[in-house]
Image 1 (cartoon, rainbow, N blue to C red):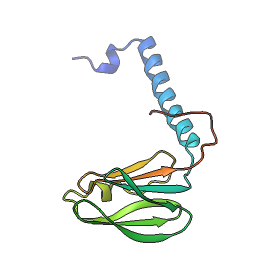
Image 2 (image 1 turned 180 degrees about the horizontal axis):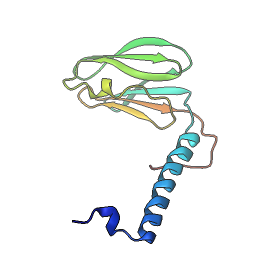
Image 3 (image 1 turned 90 degrees about the horizontal axis):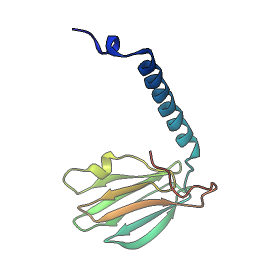
Length: 127
Protein backbone atom coordinates (compact mmCIF):
# COMPACT_ATOMS: atom_id res chain seq x y z
CA UNK A 1 0.00 0.00 0.00
CA UNK A 2 1.38 3.40 -0.96
CA UNK A 3 1.87 6.08 1.68
CA UNK A 4 0.14 9.43 1.37
CA UNK A 5 3.37 11.20 0.44
CA UNK A 6 3.92 8.83 -2.47
CA UNK A 7 0.43 9.62 -3.80
CA UNK A 8 1.04 13.38 -3.83
CA UNK A 9 2.35 15.06 -6.94
CA UNK A 10 5.06 17.72 -6.87
CA UNK A 11 2.37 20.41 -7.22
CA UNK A 12 0.41 18.98 -4.26
CA UNK A 13 3.53 19.13 -2.09
CA UNK A 14 4.25 22.73 -3.11
CA UNK A 15 0.65 23.74 -2.40
CA UNK A 16 0.64 22.03 1.03
CA UNK A 17 3.97 23.66 1.94
CA UNK A 18 2.68 27.10 0.89
CA UNK A 19 -0.49 26.69 2.96
CA UNK A 20 1.49 25.67 6.05
CA UNK A 21 3.83 28.65 5.60
CA UNK A 22 0.91 31.07 5.18
CA UNK A 23 -0.72 29.68 8.34
CA UNK A 24 2.42 30.16 10.41
CA UNK A 25 2.91 33.70 9.09
CA UNK A 26 -0.75 34.54 9.81
CA UNK A 27 -0.42 33.53 13.46
CA UNK A 28 2.75 35.63 13.78
CA UNK A 29 1.06 38.69 12.27
CA UNK A 30 -2.07 38.27 14.42
CA UNK A 31 0.07 37.99 17.56
CA UNK A 32 1.83 41.26 16.67
CA UNK A 33 -1.46 43.09 15.96
CA UNK A 34 -3.04 42.35 19.36
CA UNK A 35 -2.79 45.14 21.89
CA UNK A 36 -2.91 45.04 25.68
CA UNK A 37 -6.00 46.54 27.26
CA UNK A 38 -6.16 49.19 29.95
CA UNK A 39 -9.40 48.30 31.76
CA UNK A 40 -11.41 45.24 32.68
CA UNK A 41 -15.20 45.48 32.73
CA UNK A 42 -16.95 43.09 35.11
CA UNK A 43 -20.62 42.29 34.48
CA UNK A 44 -22.95 40.11 36.53
CA UNK A 45 -26.31 39.09 35.05
CA UNK A 46 -25.54 41.37 32.08
CA UNK A 47 -25.30 44.46 34.30
CA UNK A 48 -21.98 46.25 34.63
CA UNK A 49 -20.83 46.03 38.24
CA UNK A 50 -17.58 47.99 37.86
CA UNK A 51 -14.43 48.60 35.86
CA UNK A 52 -10.91 47.91 37.07
CA UNK A 53 -7.59 49.37 35.94
CA UNK A 54 -5.29 46.57 34.74
CA UNK A 55 -2.18 48.49 35.77
CA UNK A 56 -2.99 48.17 39.47
CA UNK A 57 -2.45 44.77 41.07
CA UNK A 58 -5.31 43.68 43.31
CA UNK A 59 -7.42 40.75 44.41
CA UNK A 60 -11.18 41.09 44.98
CA UNK A 61 -14.39 39.07 44.97
CA UNK A 62 -17.67 39.53 43.16
CA UNK A 63 -21.02 38.05 44.13
CA UNK A 64 -22.27 35.89 41.29
CA UNK A 65 -25.53 34.08 40.69
CA UNK A 66 -24.55 30.97 42.69
CA UNK A 67 -21.43 31.96 44.64
CA UNK A 68 -18.57 34.40 45.17
CA UNK A 69 -15.98 34.65 42.41
CA UNK A 70 -12.43 35.63 43.37
CA UNK A 71 -10.64 37.71 40.73
CA UNK A 72 -6.99 38.74 40.57
CA UNK A 73 -5.22 41.45 38.56
CA UNK A 74 -1.45 41.03 38.18
CA UNK A 75 1.02 42.41 35.60
CA UNK A 76 -1.67 43.92 33.37
CA UNK A 77 -3.71 40.71 33.20
CA UNK A 78 -6.89 39.59 34.94
CA UNK A 79 -8.02 36.08 35.83
CA UNK A 80 -10.49 34.21 37.98
CA UNK A 81 -8.69 32.32 40.75
CA UNK A 82 -11.68 30.93 42.61
CA UNK A 83 -15.32 30.22 41.89
CA UNK A 84 -18.10 28.06 43.27
CA UNK A 85 -19.15 26.83 39.85
CA UNK A 86 -19.01 23.05 39.36
CA UNK A 87 -16.61 22.65 36.41
CA UNK A 88 -14.41 25.71 37.06
CA UNK A 89 -13.92 26.39 33.34
CA UNK A 90 -13.56 30.09 34.09
CA UNK A 91 -10.68 29.36 36.48
CA UNK A 92 -8.95 27.04 34.00
CA UNK A 93 -9.16 29.63 31.22
CA UNK A 94 -6.29 31.57 32.76
CA UNK A 95 -5.36 35.22 32.33
CA UNK A 96 -6.52 37.66 29.68
CA UNK A 97 -4.87 40.96 28.77
CA UNK A 98 -5.63 41.80 25.12
CA UNK A 99 -8.39 44.16 23.99
CA UNK A 100 -11.52 42.17 23.14
CA UNK A 101 -10.70 39.04 25.16
CA UNK A 102 -13.32 37.75 27.62
CA UNK A 103 -13.78 35.29 30.45
CA UNK A 104 -17.27 33.93 31.03
CA UNK A 105 -18.52 32.04 34.08
CA UNK A 106 -21.92 30.77 32.95
CA UNK A 107 -23.17 29.36 36.31
CA UNK A 108 -22.34 32.66 38.07
CA UNK A 109 -23.60 34.73 35.11
CA UNK A 110 -20.32 36.67 35.22
CA UNK A 111 -18.46 38.22 32.28
CA UNK A 112 -15.05 39.87 32.38
CA UNK A 113 -14.04 41.73 29.21
CA UNK A 114 -10.92 43.72 28.36
CA UNK A 115 -11.40 47.20 26.98
CA UNK A 116 -9.17 50.00 25.87
CA UNK A 117 -8.33 52.18 22.91
CA UNK A 118 -7.27 50.41 19.75
CA UNK A 119 -4.39 51.99 17.87
CA UNK A 120 -4.96 50.06 14.66
CA UNK A 121 -7.47 50.34 11.86
CA UNK A 122 -9.01 46.87 12.23
CA UNK A 123 -12.44 46.37 13.79
CA UNK A 124 -11.96 42.65 14.36
CA UNK A 125 -9.58 39.86 13.51
CA UNK A 126 -10.68 36.27 13.28
CA UNK A 127 -8.25 33.44 13.55
